[in-house]
Image (cartoon, rainbow, N blue to C red):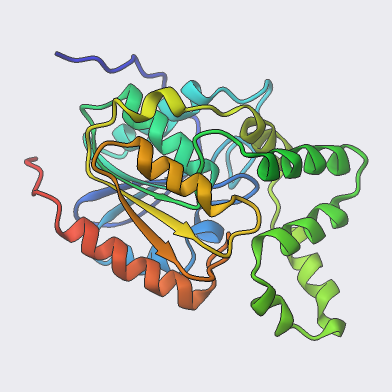
Length: 269
């Protein structure tokens, strides 16, 4: 029985790379495909087809004219995959993208073969909820450099920040500010409203949940609750890793993700 929802035409800017089994990428708030998935992109594209839609206001996607709707965003990601010729796919979600990935699987179960959810949450905990509200307030006042400072503080580990000379901190802030897409406030507004808790118990695909234990934006307990709520989900903890994985932690993430994906049953064309 087909339970999937009707899809609108996709209007999102999409990164397409590689060949092989399809991976649909769901990025985080205030980010993008390359910025969020880092060194994993080129590696996974060696033997997978990557479909990376940018949310409204990120990449080349136009800024939304109304508040983002999670169902609509999930459908847009699926429509992007279908437009790329991919009928079924695993979904890799990071941060907000984990909630998007869960909703994709809930609304389109016939198409999703597996989930990888990193630094994710089913509903905003008080820390990420307060951060989202602060980002919206600062951005509304035009204080984008302060938004960038908050992002550096909350998304990087203390160890990584300690390696940066004080004289270079403002350059880090400026680079972070330059990388923030126009839709950042819209993304964090959605962060503050997301709630996919009711979807979890109905998921029936292999799922890997990755919890960076040094995450200061999305508490690792949120990932633990995700894993506990999804039947059969496997939880992997990355000791000391921050919300935005550095290259070493991303390499560890990639090794485990490859092992997980490699163990999935082959999907018929």
